[in-house]
Image 1: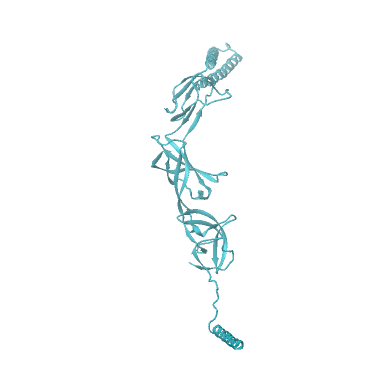
Image 2: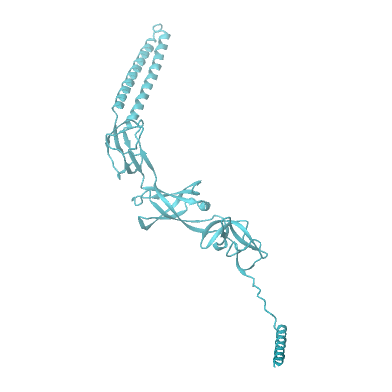
Length: 365
């Protein structure tokens, strides 16, 4: 019984092995080979990129100055206060300096004395000339002495006159006048205060600002300065007048890059007759600009940035290579690039450091 069972089991095993061999010959085993990835690619283009740069700016008064006294004295009267509008030459304050008045009186007396002496010398010389019409009456030496006296007295008079004029000018400094049309931004002293250049802790009496004309100062990042030009239009807004848009044109370019901020300062003249704008206010500036020459552009995704470099993945003859570039103007999803690359080159639309340098890739434009 056991023997028959073993015979049957052996027959079944042989049949199974036969079926397996037959199946392996008729049906080949499929291999799990990975299909090659196809990368989207684009052509590098030449264009004149334009962009509207949003950067902050600051309004400053066109002219701004602190008024210090030229001479020593006490403040006698103050005619203006903070917020007052002043015009050129207007007297803002008057100083009192009694010693200066005494010096002026002394200089006046000396000048008039020298003038009187000069007039006397001229009169003597004229009388000698008249007497000399009679031969032998006046010696030539007396005429020479009289003429020399006129020259000496004339120089003395000119010296005393110069001293007088100098002190007179100093007395005019007792009146503190506005150097330009503007607004009194600060008044720091009051009547009775001692002021003057000899005061070691000198404090300005007033701060005057010209507010009817302002300067808008804008620091332009270094990467954009080559696209800035004179008379370029701009627009800006301020926080205290959010519903208004102001316009202007680039008036001055500093042509100097700040080493700390890596930016170049430009200025825009802003007319402000109604004093709507206030100096010291921050602004949001819209600065449209465009390159004067063509440059190379690619989609922003085509430029990869790592800690070491900024690059695009160039594909040539099916081989990917990293080409280091520098970015320029970036707008509307495209960016300027500068490097060892030319118009018409093929680069991957999406660059990544996961694609090794020098690997074979398959692309589709």
